[in-house]
Length: 405
Image 1 (cartoon, one colour):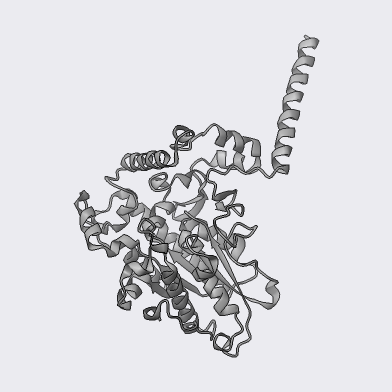
Image 2 (cartoon, one colour):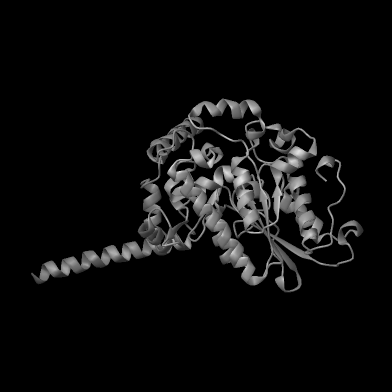
């Protein structure tokens, strides 16, 4: 019996030492359970950008695309929250609205300076695929110390609705596995995730995280696509998203349901709008306590400017309104008394072809902002910052977007 106990202790000790040594090695080696080559796992935010991704310039070690923050003691701060529209990976950093605002606000030319002599840090807290909940966490964890002079929230409701709602997990994004969510618990926002216990283990134990990713536990489509080509993988993932949408009672794509008017929305979509509204109200309340102004930028889906595209999707079983998603967010922001930069309204009023503001590098398959779109949004943000008294500076004259001024 003593021999059995000795052997058992030896085996258990060996297992513990092996696991502990492996854990230490993984931490020393900087292992992170990344499931996307462009993104880096973050235990609090879900993910950030990966500084090793060479296609994007200006990705800093903190996982965000902006200029390195300087000594905050003598500088003013503008926080920009958002998703891939803020990242602007389709254009060089200097042509993104975050990059342009960095130049315009921190520039020392006579036209820009306006006699203020201010110097600025433009801090972009944004990553591809983020929802409003992640942006709220990023603001609380990384945006409020030191106190910013203003915060800009960039909203893309076509995606944000499903990215905010845990009931719509894996209906519009494969990234939901690591996404932190908020749910309403007796009327109070409570942070959670799809698998809270596993999220905690993943946070504290790299060995568990490696096994989880390596064995594809709970990662839709990844097990089936490990050896597939990119095109095949993309098609399969779309099939997975459509299947998940059907499981929660959505007749067609989760994103498209953001355009369904309130009277025709399925219950899961109404729940998504409710949590989205509460997240925005929470962010506004947090900033009001500090006396920090919030500005909203509401970005439409580029194809909703195309009459044929809208008409073609109205035959899917529920009515669609091309401006419903953006109008709903703008109504929420209006109720919260947050200044609104409606990209849809400004583009329509510009007299220019709406598609000029989108499709970077004339890529019709990419609905992100073009260089003209980024320049225009930067000018509109600066205009609003002037209107609320945050700065006296003005955007320089430009020939690339004359109708956007």
